[in-house]
Length: 129
Image (tube, rainbow, N blue to C red; front, side):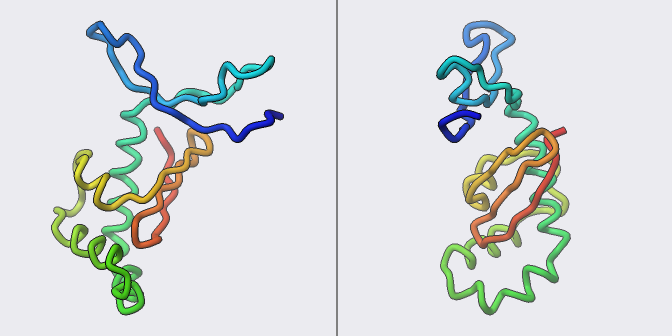
């Protein structure tokens, strides 16, 4: 096992060509004697999974409003609910403003397990494909 915690970072492939794309891969891929075997993750895959995660949150409005009284005490949670209310249902495409406004963190464990944590504490797991 590796003596460090693997962490994904953004890398640009083919930066000066028409094939340019952003991928995320393990920052420890070339550290030490053994190369990290984790696969790279395409930025588009993460964006599509985020849209699916947001849509599952939007369809679970009962869960959101059941805890609204408790959540409303936190300013970030109130902002989260307001931003959700502004969105069309279902969300059809990735929106950077929505990503920045709603999302707290993303943890990619493997290609079938990406965990999205929203600013109100809601978590959703979606595959990246």
